[in-house]
Length: 310
Image (cartoon, rainbow, N blue to C red):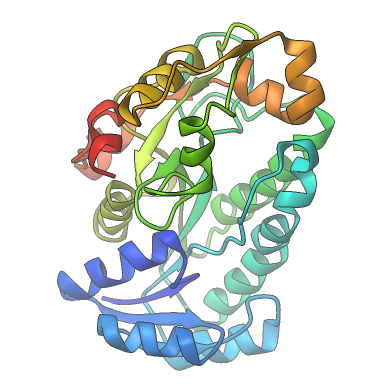
């Protein structure tokens, strides 16, 4: 099939584009400039240049590729400052709303038959009920203020894709990425903070995280291209775990001392309201549907083994 990947040079695109080429798809990589064109060509993809926020450029790129499938992997997530969570996610929020709408409009005009979009299953589920959520569970309907714009952008993207009756809309809710090119890559700032004991457990550390190795997420996306049906899929590993469990274990992997524990009010001062939510109130996600429908199994079934070789 002919597949266009928007966000082709991000952490996910870097894993995804070569895999799509390897299994025989004709891949078009939507990039913004010369550096991206060189990477795409190196992977065996055809570069098409467009700024995702410029509708005319996006329409021209999709028209040039004439793809069967469009994959939206557009993000702009750099360092996340939990004290200013909304500021950290603002560029990505715009890509998930305006950028995704531009891609959908271009895809409709080109008669694209399958549209796949990256969503977030790590930080977005409602913070009530059981510790592990399925795709039928709602996104957070009453998010704390610093996280409201991020969750609203995710909700906008998902509704737009799933309501597009002219195509087969697929939403992939990825867990917290680790592995090459991610915020939890070897030597990353986040791992260094844990190593230096600057990443404490806040409160009871009861927030449940679902991780996924970025390579496993790419494999699931290839499966969605080839086998997916309309709907939402959690793309996470088999081992959701509370912060109080995974953070000390990761510190031990890094040869660091056990993380400090601080009360919620101290955590709020240091990491803001969003930081406290991430540490104490998150819910994890189940990957049962993705395994059943996509025939996908993560090569790294648990962060416990995956992070050792990430």
